[in-house]
Amino acid sequence: MKANRQERIIAGITAGLIGTSAMLLFINGLGENNLGESVKSTTEQSAAAKVSSIDTDSTDSILSLSSLDAYMVASPFTKLTEQGNETDAAETEQKTETEGAAETETETEAETELVEPYKYENTFIANVSEYLNIRSVPSTDGEVVGKIYAGGGGQVIEKGAQWSKVVSGNAEGYINNDYAWFAQDAEAHMPEVCTMYGVSNADSLRVRKGPGTDWKVIATVNAGAEVQVLGFEGDWAKVNYIGTEAYIFAEYLETEYYIESGVTIEEEQEAIRLEQERLAEEQRRAEEAEAARQQKIQNAIANSSLTETVQTSAYNVSEEDVYLLACTVCAEAGYESYDGKLAVANIILNRLNGGAYGSTIYDVVYAKGQFSVVTNGALNRVINNGPNAESMQAAKDALAGKNNVPRYTGFCALRSANYDLYSEYSIICNQVFYRH
Image 1 (spheres, rainbow, N blue to C red):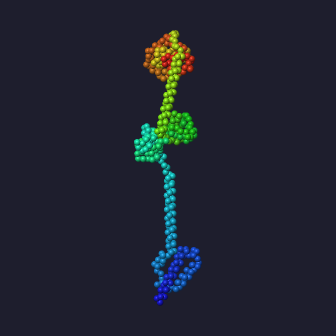
Image 2: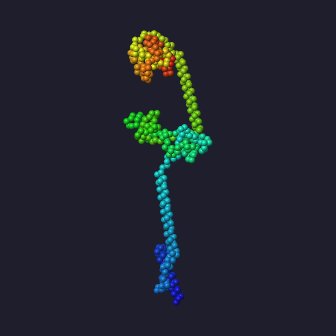
Image 3: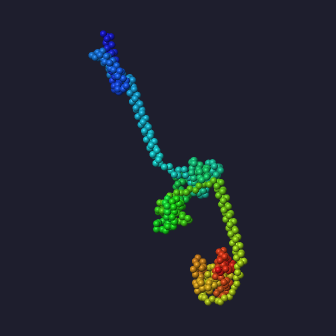
């Protein structure tokens, strides 16, 4: 009896296990795969055979819940399902991380596109009154390989605590940081040391005499034309246009400060050599011109007519005319010899006799564009202060009929004479008296 009872218990456990396996297969969807109808049929027949041998009334043959749980945990199908779930979870986690990384990367790229680099991040300007040395090594013992003059600067290659490696024009080397402005400081000091230029962004841009549309248009410039900007007055930019101050509507100018480039020592020496050659050439030409002028004067003196003094009729004029004549002589030839003063007085009287310049001494003296002392104020000063004695004597002698330039009606300073225009002339001290 005891043996039969044990067999019945074992048979029940086996049937339970088989049933549970079938149930798991069904739950996990394996019962509908390609395992084959023969496997499914065999399993069901075996389970039915075992069940029929179990004593359903015996409580000893009932599987406990704890035994079923243990079996289900140990089931290979359970492990397969768990592994599948774990794989799905891992893939989901990986996908989430990948999407997060991609999203972060996109945000970073977006931020990078929005943030523009600072324009003057690597810019420097020399903070000097004359020039800043560029040296071969970061030390005052280094050879000077270049110079940056006031208003110049360049690009920073490597910023150091005391010395920085820079490039300016064709010069490259090290500068002392104490004598330069960098980045934001450089930009802040540009208006003080750099020249601003504006480039026209419009065709036929008007250049006006003043800051407003009511001012006269003096020129027009095309797109791309460059002008020096001197400052701003409201919406108008004051510019240097061919050496003349003018105004352009600022909206049509793209302005920027120009930073002068440095020079290498070789470039500086070449520039000095060329400048010395230019000055020497100018000196040579000036000396040649002066020699030619002196020669021309000597030739003019040699060819000038000898002055002759003649006696003409005396003039009957008022005391005011005598005073005006003496003052005009003093203003024109106050530092000349007596003969020079007498000649000036007679030029005025010769014109009076010709009648082309008026009928009085006053008319002749104040004829438009004839005597420079009238327009420059020199005559008025002499009238207020009085003529010197020799000028008064020369005026009286000329009015008495003493004439040393009887045929001449014009005179000028010796330095401005053009002898080709004169049909006859005489040189008296530093003045040329002539007739056309």
